[in-house]
Length: 406
Picture 1 (spheres, rainbow, N blue to C red):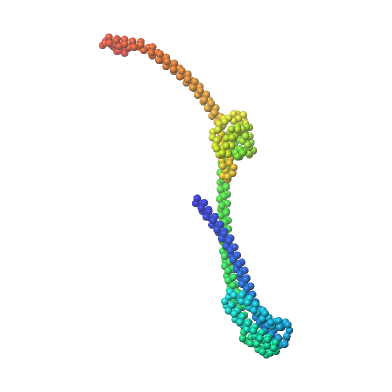
Picture 2: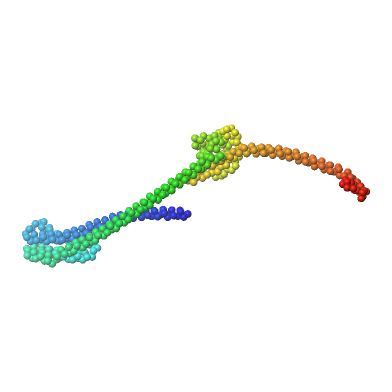
């Protein structure tokens, strides 16, 4: 009971260890993959934020540069379109940049300042374009100069980029730390796997050695049992559910003349019909099918040597340990000599009973004769005894020793 409990706990421990060393690397690898994806997303997001900030600055500066070209007299549709970009593209770009930085309060504060500066520059740029259309080049140039002096945005753009660079470094450091932790866990897990595999190999080798030793002992035990089985002088045989021979000893083979090279033979064909008795076969089938036992079944069999033998048969069912079909164990005892001796003893008993009867008759005749003799001599003996008493009285004191004796 204690050994079985220890084995169960040992098996449960090995299974738990295997689950940990197999599942933990998977979890760590999965977490590392997720962290890598998250880091890649953050890098991409930082790049997009910086790109968006630089695009806002580019659109504003490009529109202002196009306005300066218009002041210089370079008037064409492309330059006019570039000058008008600030009013069409800046607002959507600012909204997208605000959305991308909504999780960072510092960047939101810079976004507010950047939006104010961009809107101020937008208003002054539109004012410069309006004055230019009226022919007031000096006023337009002053408006552009005021936009650059009053509403600077390079500081805000640099601040947003700097914050994003700082966040990127923090995320890269966190990703590096997590990657290092993952490598440490994987290394520990690999060592645990090596240790567990070593334990499994050692345990398996021990189990294999014990199993081989047990198989060797079992083989020796089987060999000894076979030697004992073959050395038993009483005929013994083992049959399957169809009464086909599985194993017979030498005494059984010699008694019924079986061929040692023929491994399986039906019972009814053994001994040239010695087992063809229908009643016996039915009893043996009942032993197999109904788990009954056959004890001391007497019968006379004519064996292959032509001799009628008086045998006693015993049979019982054997259930195999692996749950297979049952087998029939059959033993035969040759009691021919005992039967002949019993027959002789019975004959002598009958003769003795006849002698005893004769002696009894003679005794009865002697008793009758004695009875008759005793009754016929009783009266004369009484007369003689009376005469002797009277003679003794008559002689009196003259009786000598010899007379007294008679």
